[in-house]
Amino acid sequence: MPSLISSLRRARIVLALSLGLLAVGLFACNEAATTLRKSTYPPGFRYISPEQIQGTMWQLASLTDRLDRLTDDPARLDANRDEIEQVLRALESAADELKKEGVPANHPLIHANLDAYRGDVRAALRSVEREPPSYLRAAALPGACVYCHAN
Image (cartoon, rainbow, N blue to C red):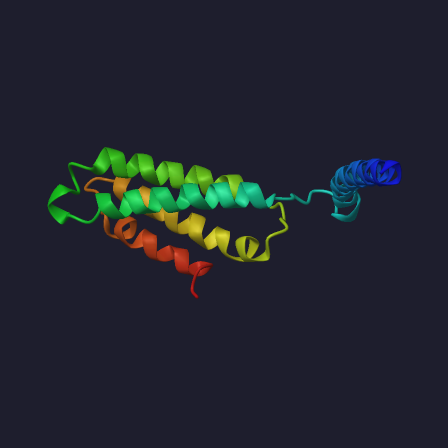
């Protein structure tokens, strides 16, 4: 019986040490990846974390859905004008978070297509702001997601 108890104690100690080493290893890998990222990307390069991309994409999706609902009824376009402008400004701001002017980023699809999307958002906003307003570009903007999400 004493050998069984000492074997269980040894197994617990080995398990505790293994879990501790695993935790230290995971922490070290995370720190190493951050350090490696700083030294492998060229100066002026902007790393966009997966969390930031996902959060901004959810924000863009939510705003796009709202814009789609606001422009769905032609009879309510003028009544919704202020809110349409607010949504377009929020879309512009969210897109600007993903790409700063002239700064390359680590997500090639975003880097390749975001300028066209931002141009569409700005054109839609200018069209809604002018007198008389035109809502055609704002109503078509939800289709601009195909730049990256064609499949």
